[in-house]
Amino acid sequence: MADQHAQLSWKDETIPVSDRFDDPYFSLQNGLEETRHVFLAGNDLPARFAPGFHIAELGFGTGLNMLTTWAAWEQSGQSTPLRFTSFEAFPMEPVDMERALAAFPELSDYAMQFLDAWTGAPCDLGTVQIEVIQGDARETLARWEGKANAWFLDGFSPAKNPELWESDLMAHVANHTAPGGTAATYTAAGFVRRGLEAAGFAVTRTPGYGRKRHMTRAVLD
Ligand SMILES: C[S@@+](CC[C@H](N)C(=O)[O-])C[C@H]1O[C@@H](n2cnc3c(N)ncnc32)[C@H](O)[C@@H]1O
Image (tube, rainbow, N blue to C red):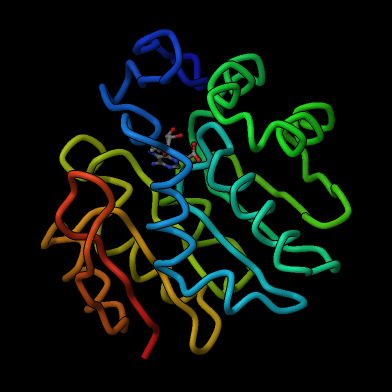
């Protein structure tokens, strides 16, 4: 069986780039700021944080989105656990996560707690409960029994990783979204927006991060 772990190269020694998808895991400009702009603000977070809030994500990668969100959750005064579920087909080795996350010193306390505990199994870190469901999201999401309040759609670029953006998968995202729930992504690709609309989301195109002119926000109708 082919190795299902992430195969990486490193750009400038710091940014992991997937060999399989030929795409970086996060913005070459500033991954942390992009996460805040696209996935937090794009889902009206932290304003919507409330006890029991559940975030789901397509593509766990380095864990940067999870750590950024966990830090925002604690800093906004939440003391109950945030639930964070991510779907990942090619998990990254912890040693690679550690190397990638070293670029974000302001997250280092969170990264250390996470990496100390992380075995790949569901993990409870007090103010966050993390579950990474391994396998192709096109199969695993259909079987998932949860519903998220907010979705982070974070596959590699739609041109390089189209299977993580296809309309059938967007329909599963909608079926696994709580009433009034939202989704956000850095891409404004037309077929992604159409897939979200067909799935029942009201979709808007808003200013993107850095050099990206537009991103997409979606609210379940
Ligand atoms: C841009 S990276 C995600 C970055 C991540 N959110 C972070 O915070 O570092 C895209 C991720 O999608 C995963 N992926 C690609 N195709 C997939 C599939 N069919 N099912 C599940 N995960 C997939 C890749 O392995 C990769 O980890």
